[in-house]
Image 1 (cartoon, rainbow, N blue to C red):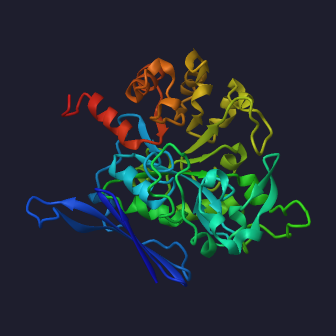
Image 2 (image 1 turned 30 degrees about the horizontal axis):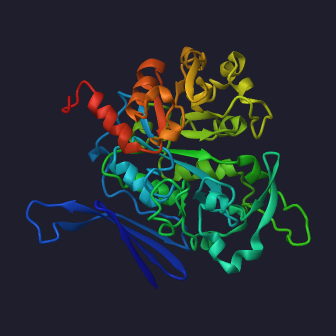
Image 3 (image 1 turned 90 degrees about the vertical axis):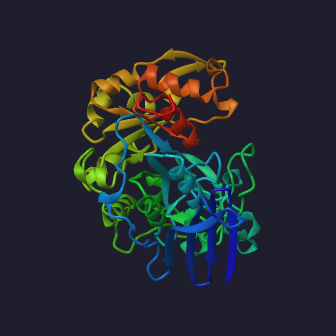
Length: 420
Protein backbone atom coordinates (compact mmCIF):
# COMPACT_ATOMS: atom_id res chain seq x y z
CA UNK A 1 0.00 0.00 0.00
CA UNK A 2 1.27 3.47 -0.87
CA UNK A 3 0.00 6.58 0.90
CA UNK A 4 0.83 9.95 -0.59
CA UNK A 5 0.02 13.24 1.13
CA UNK A 6 0.19 16.55 -0.62
CA UNK A 7 -1.32 19.85 0.25
CA UNK A 8 -1.61 23.59 0.02
CA UNK A 9 -2.31 26.22 2.64
CA UNK A 10 -6.03 25.54 2.36
CA UNK A 11 -6.43 22.03 1.05
CA UNK A 12 -4.98 18.66 1.92
CA UNK A 13 -5.28 15.80 -0.58
CA UNK A 14 -4.65 12.23 0.49
CA UNK A 15 -4.34 9.52 -2.15
CA UNK A 16 -4.51 5.96 -0.90
CA UNK A 17 -3.65 3.32 -3.50
CA UNK A 18 -4.00 -0.43 -3.48
CA UNK A 19 -3.08 -3.04 -6.05
CA UNK A 20 -6.66 -4.24 -6.57
CA UNK A 21 -8.72 -1.18 -5.77
CA UNK A 22 -8.37 2.54 -5.60
CA UNK A 23 -9.46 5.15 -3.12
CA UNK A 24 -9.09 8.89 -2.78
CA UNK A 25 -9.80 10.66 0.49
CA UNK A 26 -10.13 14.41 0.45
CA UNK A 27 -10.01 16.75 3.39
CA UNK A 28 -9.88 20.50 3.68
CA UNK A 29 -8.15 22.73 6.16
CA UNK A 30 -10.45 24.86 8.26
CA UNK A 31 -9.13 27.60 10.55
CA UNK A 32 -10.64 27.89 14.03
CA UNK A 33 -10.45 30.79 16.46
CA UNK A 34 -8.91 28.73 19.26
CA UNK A 35 -6.55 26.11 18.00
CA UNK A 36 -3.42 24.20 18.75
CA UNK A 37 -0.08 25.72 17.81
CA UNK A 38 -0.56 24.63 14.20
CA UNK A 39 -3.69 26.75 13.86
CA UNK A 40 -5.56 24.19 11.76
CA UNK A 41 -7.77 21.16 12.13
CA UNK A 42 -8.72 18.61 9.53
CA UNK A 43 -12.38 18.52 8.56
CA UNK A 44 -13.66 15.78 6.23
CA UNK A 45 -14.70 17.35 2.95
CA UNK A 46 -15.24 14.52 0.52
CA UNK A 47 -14.76 10.79 0.55
CA UNK A 48 -14.69 9.24 -2.83
CA UNK A 49 -14.17 5.49 -3.27
CA UNK A 50 -13.62 3.48 -6.40
CA UNK A 51 -13.50 -0.31 -6.29
CA UNK A 52 -12.90 -2.34 -9.42
CA UNK A 53 -16.06 -4.34 -8.79
CA UNK A 54 -18.13 -1.15 -9.08
CA UNK A 55 -15.82 1.20 -10.96
CA UNK A 56 -16.32 4.89 -10.23
CA UNK A 57 -19.37 4.53 -8.00
CA UNK A 58 -19.18 7.63 -5.83
CA UNK A 59 -20.86 8.08 -2.50
CA UNK A 60 -24.04 10.17 -2.58
CA UNK A 61 -23.93 13.76 -1.44
CA UNK A 62 -24.00 14.18 2.32
CA UNK A 63 -26.23 17.23 1.98
CA UNK A 64 -29.78 17.16 0.68
CA UNK A 65 -30.13 19.37 -2.39
CA UNK A 66 -32.70 21.48 -0.55
CA UNK A 67 -30.11 22.35 2.12
CA UNK A 68 -27.60 23.74 -0.37
CA UNK A 69 -27.08 27.29 -1.56
CA UNK A 70 -28.62 27.34 -5.05
CA UNK A 71 -26.79 27.98 -8.29
CA UNK A 72 -26.48 31.67 -9.06
CA UNK A 73 -28.26 32.56 -12.30
CA UNK A 74 -28.24 36.36 -12.13
CA UNK A 75 -24.86 36.99 -13.76
CA UNK A 76 -22.66 35.32 -16.41
CA UNK A 77 -21.59 31.82 -15.49
CA UNK A 78 -18.11 31.21 -14.11
CA UNK A 79 -17.08 27.99 -15.88
CA UNK A 80 -13.94 26.39 -14.46
CA UNK A 81 -12.13 25.24 -17.60
CA UNK A 82 -10.72 21.78 -16.71
CA UNK A 83 -10.97 22.93 -13.11
CA UNK A 84 -8.69 25.58 -11.64
CA UNK A 85 -6.00 24.45 -14.03
CA UNK A 86 -4.11 27.71 -13.77
CA UNK A 87 -3.04 26.41 -10.37
CA UNK A 88 -3.27 22.59 -10.47
CA UNK A 89 -2.83 19.99 -13.21
CA UNK A 90 -5.95 20.00 -15.34
CA UNK A 91 -8.95 17.73 -14.84
CA UNK A 92 -7.70 16.37 -11.53
CA UNK A 93 -9.68 16.20 -8.30
CA UNK A 94 -7.42 18.89 -6.87
CA UNK A 95 -8.17 21.27 -9.75
CA UNK A 96 -11.93 20.75 -9.44
CA UNK A 97 -11.98 21.12 -5.67
CA UNK A 98 -9.97 24.33 -5.86
CA UNK A 99 -12.35 25.70 -8.51
CA UNK A 100 -15.32 25.00 -6.26
CA UNK A 101 -13.54 26.63 -3.33
CA UNK A 102 -12.88 29.71 -5.49
CA UNK A 103 -16.52 30.13 -6.53
CA UNK A 104 -17.03 28.30 -9.83
CA UNK A 105 -20.63 27.99 -10.98
CA UNK A 106 -19.76 25.04 -13.23
CA UNK A 107 -16.76 22.72 -13.39
CA UNK A 108 -15.90 21.74 -16.96
CA UNK A 109 -14.34 18.51 -18.19
CA UNK A 110 -13.54 16.47 -21.31
CA UNK A 111 -14.84 12.91 -21.42
CA UNK A 112 -12.98 10.09 -23.17
CA UNK A 113 -13.19 6.31 -22.79
CA UNK A 114 -10.69 3.73 -21.59
CA UNK A 115 -10.06 0.47 -23.44
CA UNK A 116 -12.48 -1.31 -21.11
CA UNK A 117 -15.19 1.28 -21.70
CA UNK A 118 -14.94 3.37 -18.55
CA UNK A 119 -15.54 7.08 -19.10
CA UNK A 120 -12.69 9.25 -17.81
CA UNK A 121 -11.80 12.93 -17.57
CA UNK A 122 -8.90 13.77 -19.87
CA UNK A 123 -8.41 16.36 -22.58
CA UNK A 124 -6.20 14.69 -25.19
CA UNK A 125 -6.65 11.40 -27.04
CA UNK A 126 -2.99 10.69 -26.28
CA UNK A 127 -1.41 10.52 -22.85
CA UNK A 128 1.91 12.08 -23.81
CA UNK A 129 0.95 15.28 -25.63
CA UNK A 130 2.73 18.18 -23.90
CA UNK A 131 3.96 15.61 -21.35
CA UNK A 132 0.53 15.83 -19.73
CA UNK A 133 1.14 12.57 -17.83
CA UNK A 134 4.19 10.62 -16.67
CA UNK A 135 3.50 7.64 -18.95
CA UNK A 136 7.01 7.83 -20.43
CA UNK A 137 8.32 6.65 -17.05
CA UNK A 138 6.54 3.29 -17.34
CA UNK A 139 8.76 0.80 -19.11
CA UNK A 140 5.92 -1.75 -19.27
CA UNK A 141 4.08 0.60 -21.63
CA UNK A 142 7.01 1.34 -23.92
CA UNK A 143 5.64 -0.88 -26.71
CA UNK A 144 2.12 0.49 -26.49
CA UNK A 145 2.61 3.49 -28.77
CA UNK A 146 0.26 3.47 -31.74
CA UNK A 147 -0.50 5.59 -34.79
CA UNK A 148 -4.11 6.47 -35.54
CA UNK A 149 -5.87 8.87 -37.83
CA UNK A 150 -7.61 11.48 -35.70
CA UNK A 151 -9.69 14.10 -37.48
CA UNK A 152 -7.85 13.48 -40.73
CA UNK A 153 -4.36 13.66 -39.24
CA UNK A 154 -2.05 10.75 -38.36
CA UNK A 155 -1.09 10.92 -34.68
CA UNK A 156 1.44 8.75 -32.86
CA UNK A 157 1.51 8.30 -29.11
CA UNK A 158 0.10 6.45 -26.15
CA UNK A 159 -3.65 6.60 -26.74
CA UNK A 160 -6.16 6.66 -23.90
CA UNK A 161 -8.32 4.08 -25.69
CA UNK A 162 -5.51 1.49 -25.60
CA UNK A 163 -5.31 1.41 -21.80
CA UNK A 164 -7.67 -0.06 -19.24
CA UNK A 165 -8.83 2.03 -16.31
CA UNK A 166 -6.58 0.06 -13.97
CA UNK A 167 -3.59 0.96 -16.16
CA UNK A 168 -4.63 4.60 -16.45
CA UNK A 169 -4.89 4.85 -12.67
CA UNK A 170 -1.17 4.11 -12.43
CA UNK A 171 -0.39 7.37 -14.21
CA UNK A 172 -0.09 10.84 -12.75
CA UNK A 173 -1.06 14.11 -14.40
CA UNK A 174 1.33 17.01 -15.04
CA UNK A 175 0.77 20.72 -15.53
CA UNK A 176 0.36 21.29 -19.27
CA UNK A 177 1.98 24.71 -19.41
CA UNK A 178 5.64 25.10 -18.43
CA UNK A 179 5.12 28.68 -17.19
CA UNK A 180 2.61 27.53 -14.55
CA UNK A 181 3.27 26.00 -11.14
CA UNK A 182 5.06 22.67 -11.60
CA UNK A 183 5.13 21.57 -7.95
CA UNK A 184 2.08 19.31 -8.33
CA UNK A 185 3.38 17.33 -11.29
CA UNK A 186 3.14 13.59 -10.77
CA UNK A 187 0.91 13.82 -7.70
CA UNK A 188 -2.66 13.42 -8.92
CA UNK A 189 -4.29 10.56 -10.86
CA UNK A 190 -6.66 10.62 -13.79
CA UNK A 191 -10.24 10.55 -12.50
CA UNK A 192 -13.36 8.95 -13.92
CA UNK A 193 -16.52 10.70 -15.07
CA UNK A 194 -18.29 9.37 -11.99
CA UNK A 195 -15.58 10.62 -9.64
CA UNK A 196 -15.87 14.05 -11.23
CA UNK A 197 -19.64 14.00 -10.73
CA UNK A 198 -19.14 13.03 -7.10
CA UNK A 199 -16.93 16.07 -6.51
CA UNK A 200 -19.74 18.34 -7.76
CA UNK A 201 -22.46 16.53 -5.80
CA UNK A 202 -20.49 16.67 -2.56
CA UNK A 203 -19.91 20.41 -2.70
CA UNK A 204 -21.57 22.40 0.06
CA UNK A 205 -23.51 24.44 -2.51
CA UNK A 206 -25.04 23.58 -5.86
CA UNK A 207 -22.22 23.34 -8.41
CA UNK A 208 -23.02 22.52 -12.01
CA UNK A 209 -21.11 20.22 -14.33
CA UNK A 210 -20.16 20.97 -17.92
CA UNK A 211 -18.86 17.76 -19.57
CA UNK A 212 -17.73 17.58 -23.19
CA UNK A 213 -18.33 14.61 -25.49
CA UNK A 214 -14.71 14.53 -26.66
CA UNK A 215 -13.62 13.14 -30.04
CA UNK A 216 -16.81 11.06 -30.49
CA UNK A 217 -16.00 10.05 -34.07
CA UNK A 218 -12.65 8.61 -32.99
CA UNK A 219 -14.15 6.80 -29.99
CA UNK A 220 -17.12 5.39 -31.92
CA UNK A 221 -15.46 4.16 -35.09
CA UNK A 222 -13.15 1.61 -33.38
CA UNK A 223 -10.22 2.08 -35.78
CA UNK A 224 -7.17 -0.13 -35.78
CA UNK A 225 -3.68 1.35 -35.77
CA UNK A 226 -1.95 2.05 -39.04
CA UNK A 227 0.04 -1.07 -39.76
CA UNK A 228 3.80 -0.94 -39.45
CA UNK A 229 6.26 -3.55 -38.26
CA UNK A 230 6.44 -2.17 -34.76
CA UNK A 231 2.70 -1.68 -34.17
CA UNK A 232 0.29 -4.39 -33.12
CA UNK A 233 -3.32 -4.44 -34.19
CA UNK A 234 -5.68 -3.84 -31.29
CA UNK A 235 -9.37 -3.15 -30.99
CA UNK A 236 -10.42 0.11 -29.42
CA UNK A 237 -13.36 0.89 -27.17
CA UNK A 238 -16.34 -1.38 -27.65
CA UNK A 239 -19.20 -1.76 -25.23
CA UNK A 240 -20.70 -5.23 -24.87
CA UNK A 241 -24.25 -3.92 -25.20
CA UNK A 242 -23.52 -2.32 -28.58
CA UNK A 243 -24.03 1.19 -27.24
CA UNK A 244 -22.32 4.28 -28.63
CA UNK A 245 -20.08 6.65 -26.73
CA UNK A 246 -22.91 9.18 -26.49
CA UNK A 247 -25.25 6.53 -25.05
CA UNK A 248 -22.84 5.70 -22.22
CA UNK A 249 -22.23 9.41 -21.63
CA UNK A 250 -25.93 10.16 -21.15
CA UNK A 251 -26.51 6.98 -19.12
CA UNK A 252 -23.94 8.21 -16.60
CA UNK A 253 -25.61 11.60 -16.29
CA UNK A 254 -29.03 10.02 -15.87
CA UNK A 255 -27.71 7.61 -13.25
CA UNK A 256 -26.78 10.53 -11.01
CA UNK A 257 -29.98 12.51 -11.45
CA UNK A 258 -28.93 14.97 -14.15
CA UNK A 259 -32.03 15.74 -16.17
CA UNK A 260 -34.39 18.51 -17.14
CA UNK A 261 -34.44 21.38 -19.58
CA UNK A 262 -32.57 24.60 -18.93
CA UNK A 263 -33.80 26.44 -15.80
CA UNK A 264 -36.36 23.76 -14.96
CA UNK A 265 -36.69 22.71 -11.30
CA UNK A 266 -34.95 19.44 -12.11
CA UNK A 267 -32.09 21.22 -13.85
CA UNK A 268 -31.59 23.76 -11.07
CA UNK A 269 -31.34 20.89 -8.59
CA UNK A 270 -28.45 19.29 -10.53
CA UNK A 271 -27.41 21.68 -13.29
CA UNK A 272 -25.45 20.45 -16.30
CA UNK A 273 -24.58 21.58 -19.80
CA UNK A 274 -23.59 18.97 -22.41
CA UNK A 275 -21.01 20.32 -24.86
CA UNK A 276 -19.33 19.09 -28.03
CA UNK A 277 -17.51 20.30 -31.13
CA UNK A 278 -19.37 17.58 -33.08
CA UNK A 279 -22.86 18.76 -34.11
CA UNK A 280 -24.12 15.25 -34.83
CA UNK A 281 -23.30 14.17 -31.27
CA UNK A 282 -25.51 16.92 -29.92
CA UNK A 283 -28.39 16.19 -32.28
CA UNK A 284 -28.08 12.50 -31.36
CA UNK A 285 -28.09 13.16 -27.61
CA UNK A 286 -31.11 15.42 -28.01
CA UNK A 287 -33.13 12.21 -28.35
CA UNK A 288 -31.58 10.81 -25.16
CA UNK A 289 -31.83 13.72 -22.72
CA UNK A 290 -33.41 17.14 -22.44
CA UNK A 291 -30.38 18.55 -20.64
CA UNK A 292 -29.23 21.82 -22.28
CA UNK A 293 -26.54 21.48 -24.91
CA UNK A 294 -23.79 23.82 -26.10
CA UNK A 295 -22.24 23.64 -29.58
CA UNK A 296 -18.54 24.45 -29.35
CA UNK A 297 -17.05 26.49 -32.20
CA UNK A 298 -13.41 26.41 -33.25
CA UNK A 299 -11.53 28.74 -35.60
CA UNK A 300 -13.73 29.39 -38.63
CA UNK A 301 -11.21 27.72 -40.96
CA UNK A 302 -11.30 24.39 -39.08
CA UNK A 303 -13.63 21.59 -40.17
CA UNK A 304 -15.88 19.64 -37.82
CA UNK A 305 -14.86 16.07 -37.11
CA UNK A 306 -18.24 14.63 -38.09
CA UNK A 307 -20.03 16.74 -40.70
CA UNK A 308 -16.94 18.10 -42.52
CA UNK A 309 -18.33 21.62 -42.42
CA UNK A 310 -16.10 24.53 -41.56
CA UNK A 311 -16.97 26.43 -38.43
CA UNK A 312 -17.55 29.37 -40.75
CA UNK A 313 -20.45 27.33 -42.12
CA UNK A 314 -21.51 26.48 -38.56
CA UNK A 315 -21.80 30.16 -37.67
CA UNK A 316 -23.97 31.08 -40.66
CA UNK A 317 -27.52 32.31 -40.17
CA UNK A 318 -29.00 29.22 -41.81
CA UNK A 319 -27.04 26.82 -39.60
CA UNK A 320 -27.86 28.73 -36.43
CA UNK A 321 -31.53 28.51 -37.45
CA UNK A 322 -31.08 24.73 -37.67
CA UNK A 323 -29.01 24.04 -34.57
CA UNK A 324 -31.11 26.23 -32.26
CA UNK A 325 -33.63 23.39 -32.24
CA UNK A 326 -31.08 21.19 -30.46
CA UNK A 327 -28.91 23.49 -28.33
CA UNK A 328 -29.39 26.37 -25.90
CA UNK A 329 -26.15 28.06 -26.77
CA UNK A 330 -22.76 28.15 -28.43
CA UNK A 331 -19.25 28.04 -27.01
CA UNK A 332 -17.02 29.89 -29.49
CA UNK A 333 -13.30 30.48 -29.46
CA UNK A 334 -12.90 34.15 -28.51
CA UNK A 335 -11.35 35.13 -31.84
CA UNK A 336 -14.49 34.06 -33.70
CA UNK A 337 -16.35 36.78 -31.79
CA UNK A 338 -13.73 39.52 -31.98
CA UNK A 339 -11.01 39.15 -34.60
CA UNK A 340 -7.44 40.13 -33.74
CA UNK A 341 -4.42 41.59 -35.47
CA UNK A 342 -0.90 41.96 -34.04
CA UNK A 343 -2.28 40.96 -30.61
CA UNK A 344 -4.81 43.79 -30.65
CA UNK A 345 -8.57 43.39 -30.84
CA UNK A 346 -9.79 44.18 -34.30
CA UNK A 347 -13.35 43.72 -35.54
CA UNK A 348 -16.38 42.63 -33.53
CA UNK A 349 -18.29 40.06 -35.57
CA UNK A 350 -22.05 39.64 -35.48
CA UNK A 351 -21.87 36.17 -33.92
CA UNK A 352 -23.07 37.17 -30.43
CA UNK A 353 -25.87 39.32 -31.84
CA UNK A 354 -26.98 36.55 -34.19
CA UNK A 355 -26.93 33.97 -31.42
CA UNK A 356 -28.87 36.16 -29.01
CA UNK A 357 -31.41 36.96 -31.70
CA UNK A 358 -32.17 33.22 -31.79
CA UNK A 359 -32.36 32.88 -28.03
CA UNK A 360 -28.95 31.20 -27.78
CA UNK A 361 -26.47 31.80 -24.98
CA UNK A 362 -22.80 32.51 -25.71
CA UNK A 363 -20.04 31.00 -23.54
CA UNK A 364 -16.64 31.79 -25.15
CA UNK A 365 -13.31 30.15 -24.31
CA UNK A 366 -10.62 30.35 -22.94
CA UNK A 367 -9.81 33.17 -20.52
CA UNK A 368 -6.31 33.04 -19.06
CA UNK A 369 -4.50 35.50 -16.80
CA UNK A 370 -1.03 35.26 -18.30
CA UNK A 371 0.13 38.23 -20.35
CA UNK A 372 0.72 36.06 -23.41
CA UNK A 373 -3.04 35.44 -23.58
CA UNK A 374 -4.17 39.01 -22.85
CA UNK A 375 -4.57 41.24 -25.88
CA UNK A 376 -2.64 44.48 -25.62
CA UNK A 377 -5.87 46.46 -25.37
CA UNK A 378 -6.22 45.15 -21.80
CA UNK A 379 -2.82 46.43 -20.56
CA UNK A 380 -1.99 43.11 -18.88
CA UNK A 381 -5.11 43.35 -16.73
CA UNK A 382 -7.46 40.33 -16.77
CA UNK A 383 -10.15 42.36 -15.00
CA UNK A 384 -10.17 44.77 -17.92
CA UNK A 385 -10.68 41.79 -20.22
CA UNK A 386 -13.60 40.48 -18.14
CA UNK A 387 -15.20 43.93 -18.15
CA UNK A 388 -14.91 44.18 -21.95
CA UNK A 389 -16.43 40.79 -22.68
CA UNK A 390 -19.25 41.02 -20.16
CA UNK A 391 -20.27 44.66 -20.42
CA UNK A 392 -19.45 45.44 -24.06
CA UNK A 393 -19.79 42.14 -25.88
CA UNK A 394 -22.56 40.84 -23.63
CA UNK A 395 -21.60 37.19 -23.16
CA UNK A 396 -23.59 34.87 -20.89
CA UNK A 397 -20.71 32.95 -19.31
CA UNK A 398 -17.07 32.16 -19.95
CA UNK A 399 -14.53 29.37 -19.66
CA UNK A 400 -11.58 30.37 -17.50
CA UNK A 401 -8.42 28.71 -16.19
CA UNK A 402 -8.46 31.11 -13.23
CA UNK A 403 -11.82 30.71 -11.54
CA UNK A 404 -10.85 32.76 -8.51
CA UNK A 405 -9.92 35.82 -10.56
CA UNK A 406 -13.22 35.87 -12.40
CA UNK A 407 -15.19 35.24 -9.20
CA UNK A 408 -13.43 38.13 -7.45
CA UNK A 409 -14.10 40.42 -10.43
CA UNK A 410 -17.80 39.58 -10.32
CA UNK A 411 -17.99 40.04 -6.56
CA UNK A 412 -16.23 43.39 -6.68
CA UNK A 413 -18.34 44.72 -9.55
CA UNK A 414 -21.70 43.41 -8.38
CA UNK A 415 -24.08 46.15 -7.18
CA UNK A 416 -24.94 43.88 -4.23
CA UNK A 417 -21.33 43.21 -3.25
CA UNK A 418 -20.22 44.19 0.24
CA UNK A 419 -16.83 45.10 -1.26
CA UNK A 420 -18.22 48.09 -3.15
